[in-house]
Length: 138
Image (cartoon, rainbow, N blue to C red; front, side, top):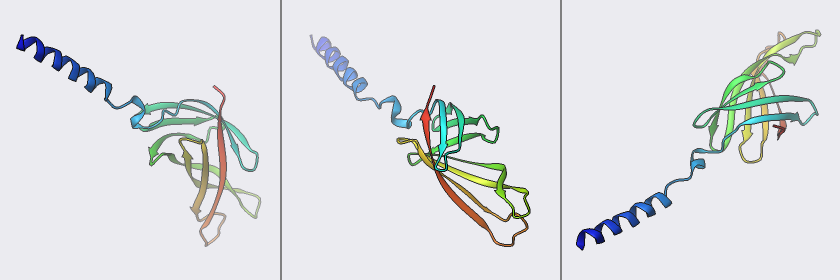
């Protein structure tokens, strides 16, 4: 009789342990699907995002400029890439620039911080930031 009681208590405790296990989303939200990128100035592109591990999402844009892994850090997806024509120079040419993207995982609103770069023959470091939103379309 004691063995049955111990077995029953063990089964109940095991069930309680299963019921208290951490939910699957505890490692952060899954960033997955097709999104419309809309910057504050109205420019758009399409991003295709696929998970690449815990706290990792691979982002590819239809512009061809973005093809990177984003990392989830403190509730924000973050990545850096080089845009070949980030800066409009006074002489009419374009210069490459570094872009740092930060995207709030909950709201899908973010910021692209461009620079710091020394471009267009300037001796000063150039920086600029603009906001954007992602809207899931697939």
